[in-house]
Length: 438
Image 1: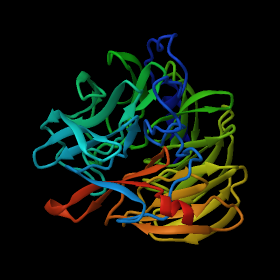
Image 2: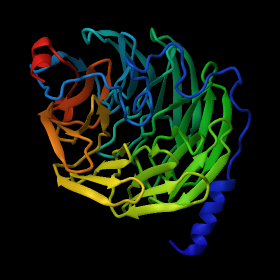
Image 3: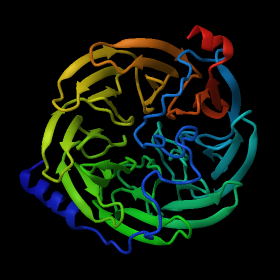
Image 4: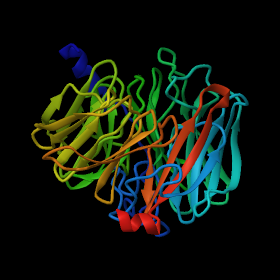
């Protein structure tokens, strides 16, 4: 990118915003929701800590049909949204493509039985979508009292809030949305922060990050983004001593104040379009993408615009995972890397199998990472060498990331193609026999 154009884009990132009021002062901080339990719930995209790290509760490493399987339930329609697990229920979005119908459904955590299903939109699906995307890709976010889901229909990004029994509380047009050059659909998951739900809508038109009041759907603030197509979900992490709203794509890695939407800093990095959600450790943030070029990058998040390191590896659809000073990335070709987080030094790499769309979860001391063919690799986060623990195959396709909480693994997979395709939700947990063996 020419230096002059880069400077113009950086100026736009830092100045193009329209922020209004911050969320109510009586709301509690990040992850501090009294009706949620970090040990037993997986309330939103990438789990309670928002970075793919679960609790240390033991979970099975070997599982499949008939092995450590607690139950298996048919999921109607089609979608790539990950399971959201709160209390004794699991929540999913799905889309009936032929009927052009969006729905939210709840399943019983103990049995997988469907408890309710509610239509939230009928008609006006986009004409085109990417072959690896669906009309129900964003994952539901739950604050313990309400469910928040986002969909693309009627040339808009729309948000809906429901109570835990499926009653619709409010619906809201978040922003106009109709990509022209890249008709690849919509993917970012909603993000709950204090009194708001934060939603990204980025395409080759008027693009924004918008915060809505959780109770009413009223706009709390809105920050303008560049008119460039990207797909990453925003995330809030406590980095460099403060909560920062982080997002990559549009040729920059950027930070915003999640209370107001005001920009903190933007550093040139990644590429045009990214899909993965950023991760962080200490005062360093990590991002990867994408299209049309490839880059994984580490940036000091103190506003100094210091790039610690970068390389030419690409994790486009999937996210990274950072643990104990090391960054793990499984690229689209199925090559797994371990890098030193501070220096970027390659500790090791291991060829597995791709392509890869799902994001990883660290649970019970192991990393769980699936490829698109339904193979779930389980390996230790060891910076000295690659240590494969188990290799499991579930279904014929896996695009949704797992939810792991309360000693259970919830995994959405698919079997078949075209009209005969069937999606399934599996629940795996240690049986008494398996517990003695593992």
